[in-house]
Image (cartoon, rainbow, N blue to C red; front, side, top):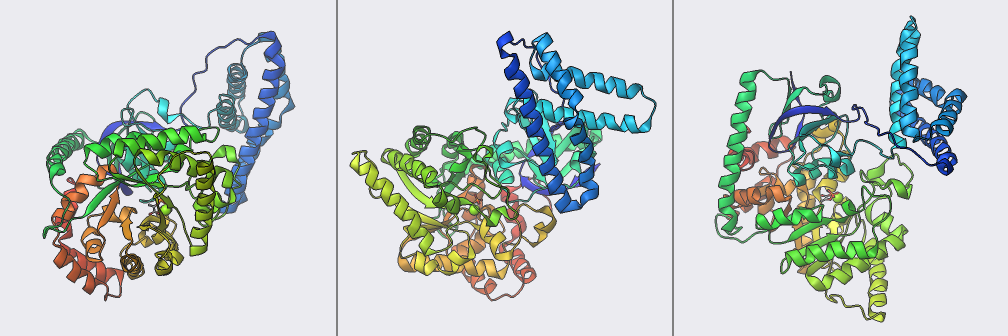
Length: 585
Ligand code: PEP
Ligand code: MG
C-alpha cells in the first residue's frame, strides 16, 4: 500500500515502523524506603489529578473541533480516574509492598484487564481498551515522560505518528531514526524544518499513516516524492535500494562543488549561509562550506527542558557557535517561542490562533526578564566572533525600537560591570509580517539588515496556516502578492544601503532560486543539507536572464501563469534534479 503526502525532507529510508506512543513501557521494580511511602502516595494522587486535567483538555479540544460525540469517549477514562477504589487499592499496595507507584499501578491495570476479559459481556470487553489507554497515560505521567523519549530509542526505526511537535523532532538522531511520517503537517512547519536539519527523510500530511501502519511493518519513506509504502513487494524494495545508492552517489558528486565559488553562471557572487537550530549542526555547516549562519533559531535551546537555560548556559552555546564560525558571521535570532513551539513549564495559556498570538518578539517584550537574559548572553558571546542580533516577527518600527530599548539597557548594564562585548554588533529585523514588508522603507532607516522570513510571510499574507496539510495547496510562494512583497523589501533595503537576505524555505527551492536572483536577492540562508544543492542551482543560472524573466513575471496576474512561465523559462525540471536526484516528472 502506498500513501501520498507532502515531501518535507529528502532521501530514502527503508526500515521497520515504530508507532509512537503505541509501545509498552518496561518498568523496573524499584523499592522505596518506609519514610518515602506518604510521598509516593501523594505523587500518585497528583498524577491522577494531572492526568484528569490532560483528559479534560483533550475533551475540550475535541469538542471544539469534532463535537461532543467524539469527546464523550473520554468520559469512561474520567470515570476510571475518579474511581475511589483505585486510589484506595494503590494506597494500600504502596504501604504494604513499598515499591514505586508505576510498578504497582501496572500490576493493578493488568489485574483489571484480566478480570474484565473473563466477563462474557460486550460492554466490559470494550472497557478493556479504556483501561489500557488511561492506564498508559497515568504510567507515562508517573514516569515523568510526556511521550516516548525519541532521543533514547534503541533500534533503527521509522517513526510513525499522528503528529510530531518541533520539540519531539529535535530529539531525533539519524543514527536511531531512519525516517518519519505523520498524518498532519506542512512543508514549512518547524517539524519539517527540523527534519531537514537532522537530515532525516520525512513525509508529512499523509492523513492516515498512523492508522494504516502497524508496529513492525516494513516501510519505505521516499522523502523526495512524498510517498510512504507499507509492506512493499520485494521488487519495489530492490528498486528503492537502488535509488538509495543513487542518492549516495549524488551526494558524493555534490561534494565536488564545495570548493567552487557561489556565483551565478555570469559571475555574480552570491552569499550562501546556513540556518541552524542546534549548535551540533555547526560541523555539517562547516563541512558544506557555508559562508556563515544566516539564521540561528535559538528557541530550540529552550525546548525539551524543565527550566529555562541560564545566562551562562546560553552564553556558552552562543560563544561556541561564534568561535566555530569565526571569521564568518552568525545571525542569532532572539527567542521565537509560541506558534508551534512551546515550553510546558512556562504555563503559557493555550491560544486559538497561536501563530498570530503571543509569539516571538511579543512574548519577549512581555517577559523582559527572559529577553534580557538572552540578550546579555549574546552580547557577552559577541566578542568571540562576528555575531549579529535579529528580532523575529517585527510588525512595526515601534516594536523594533522597543526591542532596541531593552537591548540598550542590557548594553548599559554590561558597560557598568565592565563586561566586554562587540559594541558594533549589527541589529536586524526579520521581515515576515506583511506590515513590516510594507513599511520596509521606514524600518530600513533604523535596522542594520533585513532577513526575509517567507515561511511566515506567506502564511500571514495569504492567511494560510503553514502547518495545516488541508490547505497546503493554498500555501503558494508564487502568489503575485508574495513576489511583490519580496521585491518591495529588497528595494527598500538597497535604497537605504543595508543588506538583505532571505532565510525562509522558499530560497532553498530550485523553482524559486532564479526568480529570487532576478528580484535582486544576493544572500540565501538555507538548511545545511541544502547548502551545496542551492549552490549547484545558483551556478547554473544566468543573472542577466533571471532579471529579465523576473521583470516579466512581475507583470503576470495569476499563480498559474507564473508557474507556467517559470517552468518554461527556467527549465525547472533540470533545476529540480540538482536537488532531488530521484524525483521524476
Ligand atoms: C520564516 O518565517 O521564514 C523563518 C525563517 O522563521 P521560522 O521558520 O522559524 O518561523
Ligand atoms: Mg518565522
